[in-house]
Image (cartoon, rainbow, N blue to C red; front, side, top):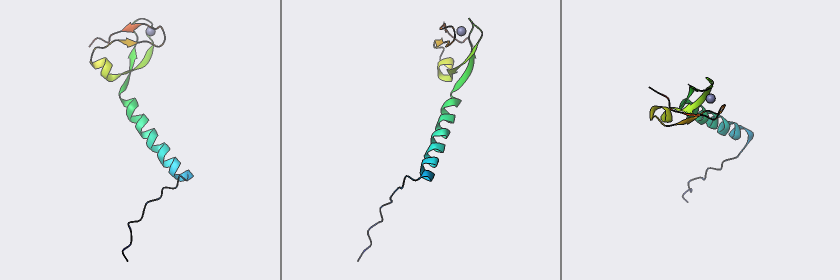
Amino acid sequence: MLKKPGRFVVHHSHYEREKIMSYLTAIMAFLKKSEARTKCPVCNKYSSQSVSKRSHGQTMLCPYCKSLFIKEK
Ligand SMILES: [Zn+2]
C-alpha cells in the first residue's frame, strides 16, 4: 500500500506565533526603509515621509502644522 503524502499540520504553538511575529517585524522594518525623515519648511519639524512621494515631487503633509509642501531636489 502506497503511503499518501503526509499533510503538514501546522500547530499554532507559541513558538509558531513568535516566528510569525518576527516575520511581520521584518516586513515592517522593510516598509520603514521606504520612508525618510523630511523637514517641514513651515515649522522645521521632522516627520517620516514616503521616499517615492519625495522623489516624485508629490505634496507631503506635515503631521505637526498640517502644511502641504513639496521637497525640492
Ligand atoms: Zn510643519
